[in-house]
Amino acid sequence: RKEVEQDPGPFNVPEGATVAFNCTYSNSASQSFFWYRQDCRKEPKLLMSVYSSGNEDGRFTAQLNRASQYISLLIRDSKLSDSATYLCVVNPTTGANNLFFGTGTRLTVIP
Amino acid sequence: GAVVSQHPSWVICKSGTSVKIECRSLDFQATTMFWYRQFPKQSLMLMATSNEGSKATYEQGVEKDKFLINHASLTLSTLTVTSAHPEDSSFYICSANPIGGGYNEQFFGPGTRLTVL
Image: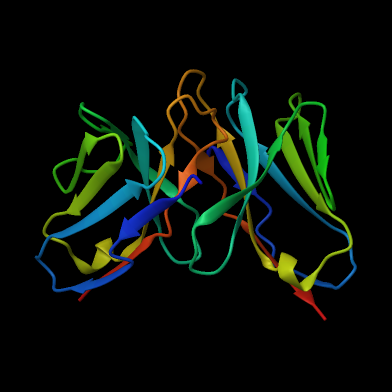
């Protein structure tokens, strides 16, 4: 089983729409969770960390459900510039700082 | 701040040759750097963890004799793909963890696209 499994998409949504991505992780002892954004042929960039209590950064809201080993990302009022691949990322090992990436969900926001 | 560079950004080589990729942290020091590989339409796969002054730790299935890693200073790690073959063609990305930084402070280089003919 993969460390991180993601809804593959692709998602094609109109500007202004709300879209949600889901992700599950296999290691119940995982400690840290993130959403990264990757544009085509570019390196991934940290979008936001995911905290147990849930957290919001502008139009982006991340949720973590440890019992279900489930992470989500909600994007409100989608902009054209939000078009990218969103990667669910997990640090599975306490004491180490390597990251495991999901396969990514491709989002295209349509004018 | 927190910029990571990679060189070269793009390389095309003949089968059987070796290719060296450099990863540098430009404005911070990192005892740990990571090397990832990404095939088209797939996610980043961790290849190895590069530790300054010691041997790299390789993930299962990654041949350490084929992918040589050297981390001789706190700002430079190199990955050498030895005797490259077409199946090694991929996007290689490094990341660096600043000394004293948390897990979410892993900064990525821009990647190196390797094409082996």
